[in-house]
Every structure is written in structure tokens, then in C-alpha cells.
Amino acid sequence: MTANAAAEQVRIDLGDRSYPIHIADGLIGRIGSLGLPRAHAALIVTNTTVAPLYASALQAALQPHYAQVSVVALPDGEAYKDWATLNLIFDALLERASDRKTVLYALGGGVVGDITGFAAASYMRGVPFVQVPTTLLAQVDSSVGGKTAINHPLGKNMIGAFYQPQMVVCDLATLRTLPARELSAGLAEVIKYGPIADIAFLDWIEANLPALMARDAQALAHAVRRSCEIKADVVGQDERESGLRAILNFGHTFGHAIEAGLGYGQWLHGEAVGCGMVMALHLSRELGGVDDAFVARCSRLIAQAGLPIQGPPLGVDRYLALMRLDKKAEAGEIRFVVIDGPGRATVRSAPDALVAKVIARCCA
Ligand code: NAD
Ligand code: GLY
Image (cartoon, rainbow, N blue to C red; front, side):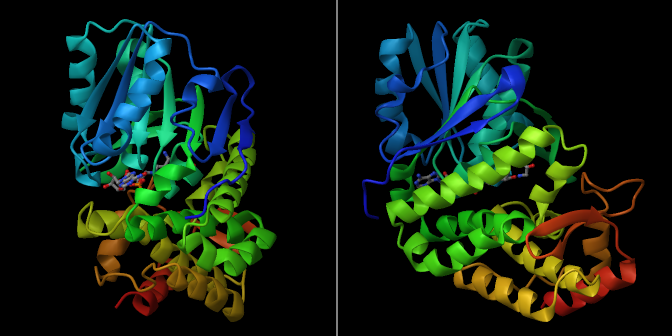
């Protein structure tokens, strides 16, 4: 990864809940210069993989700003995004007699960010939190926009809250230690923004995929900034997903079924989303929104990013049953994000027979 990418800033405009997203190389060490939330104590919530890499640097950078800065390291993995692990955060807070003047710092990927955000939303009915995302997926998507959640065995992200962070701090340097498979998973969420919102960005990703996969800092900085800009624009218009925000779930209806059907953690979330986007593209073509060439173009890019484009053979009935649990479903009717023209997405239902045809075509 080359260094020296320029510092970028994107703002989420949500009235008195607005906040900045800072994007630059080496930000953890400089976090104190970003205008931290004032509080008595800080608790860094991270996991057992990220803690040895970045927790002491963040703790040292925060120490001048709070009377007490401590760390709790959760077990690592999607399988731990659950009640028992959430309780470990509450245990840590209560053991330290933490009051409302405590700020949580979520240091890690989307799992740590989602669970920490939910803890912040509910501890003493709400304490402030800061997102310090350390995966590409978390920097371009999960740390931004205030969706927080844990999983239920019957459905992903089913228990949660909309709760915005005070700021997001994307230190691009953390992406240097990310395993290649995780980088690819993050690229799925970057690619997502092209078909749903910005064909010029899709062109840019195609041209710069080798640089992104080589972790070129300039390329990563641009990808994170443009992704955050698109997400900020959508979230600014529809924070609580009463309509437009659902387009950010492109590929997720099929993807969540893959994740739940295989058992959380078998496929990475981004892998399931990548494959889910291919399935949603085929459905979009069946519905007349895009042509074969666009499906082939996006599928090729997803494959080149190192993501699966063939779904697991869960069976049509199982896919349909799992997708009926999706949060977008209404009265048992599954609703899909489909592309209704390059760079434009909409949410709609589709006949089961058409969905079954797509599943049969896309799942080995
Ligand atoms: P993750 O949090 O499991 O992180 C992936 C792996 O990388 C983990 O093993 C983690 O410990 C490790 N890791 C993290 N940073 C690292 C680093 N810098 N170096 C080395 N290893 C590192 O997975 P993810 O892909 O970041 O997030 C997926 C989660 O995000 C899912 O639970 C998904 O539901 C959620 N999500 C939420 C939203 C939202 O809007 N809230 C959006 C998209 C996804
Ligand atoms: N990741 C989808 C959303 O934030 O709405």
C-alpha cells in the first residue's frame, strides 16, 4: 500500500445529529486533533484480533482527553454478534461504574461497530459513541448512517436501533493488515454504489480495481470518500429507511439468505452481498431494468474483486423462506432492490416464479 493519500472529510447532514467522517492515513494516532466528544471516561470496544493491532495506539491517543480510558476485547466473528457478547460490553461498563459521561469507541469491523453502537444506544438509554472502522467494509458502509444491531438465530440484524455516532474516523493505514479475503468483502460494498447510484463511479472502480486490490492509498481514499458521499446523501434524505435508504441493501436480500442459510460466518457478509448482487442483477434483467451486457459487466467486476458469483445450493424453498424474514418484506411478500436503469435502483416485489428462476440459474 502506498502512503500519503490526502485527508478527506465527508459530512452526514442530519440536523442536530450531523457528524463528520474523517478519512486519512494514520488518523488513529491523531484522533485527539479531530474534536472528540467530551466525557469523563472512554471505553474502547474492540475484538481479540484487532486489539493487539490498534487498541494500545488508540488508548494512548485518547488518554490525554479522558480521566479513564479502558479496553474491552470481544470474541471475534459474526457468530458472536449476539446477546451474550453484547452483555460483555454492559458488564465492562457496569464493572467500571460507568455513568452517562462515558463515550464508547468502536474499534474494528462492522461486527464491532454494529454491536458497540447498539450498546451505546441502550446503555443508560443512550451514551455517545465514535466509530473507528478498521475494515474496508466498515469504512465504506457499516460505520456510517447509524444502523446498529445484533443477530437473532432466526434472522440477521433483527434486534437493533437507529443511533448515530458522534463521528467516524477512517484510518486507511489499518487496511494494511486486513486479510485479502476481507478486502474483497469490502469491495463488494464499494461496487454496490455504482449500479444503484453512480455509473461514473462504477467506471472508476473498473479502471482502478487493480490499485484497490494492491491497497494503493490514493485509490482507497477515493473509494472510501465517494462511497461515504453516496451513503451520506441517501441517509441524509431517509435516515430511518422509510423508502430511499433501502436501495443501500442492493444484493442484501439474497445475501442475507445465503448468510443465514449457511450459518453466520461461513461466507463473509461482503461475499454474500457480492453474490447477492449478481442474483439481484439477474432479477433486474428479468424485470426489464437492465440488459444482459450490464449484468455481465457487473458480474465480471464482482468476480475480479475476488468474490463468489455462484450462490450455495440451499434450494429454492429455503431461499424463499429465508427471504420472507428480510426486514424489507411486507406481510410475507419479499421486496427486492432491483436496478431499473444503470445507476438507478428501486425496491419492489417480484413473482415467486421469477425469483425461483434466478435462484436456479445462479446457485450451483
Ligand atoms: P468483521 O467485523 O467480522 O471484520 C472482519 C474480520 O477482520 C474480523 O475477523 C476482524 O477481527 C478482522 N479485522 C478487522 N479489522 C482488521 C484489520 N485492520 N486488520 C486485520 N484484521 C482486521 O466484518 P466486516 O466485514 O467489517 O463487517 C460485517 C458486519 O457489518 C456484518 O455483521 C454486517 O451485518 C454489518 N454491516 C452493517 C451495516 C450497517 O449499516 N450497520 C452495513 C453493512 C454491514
Ligand atoms: N448498509 C445499508 C444501510 O446502511 O442502510
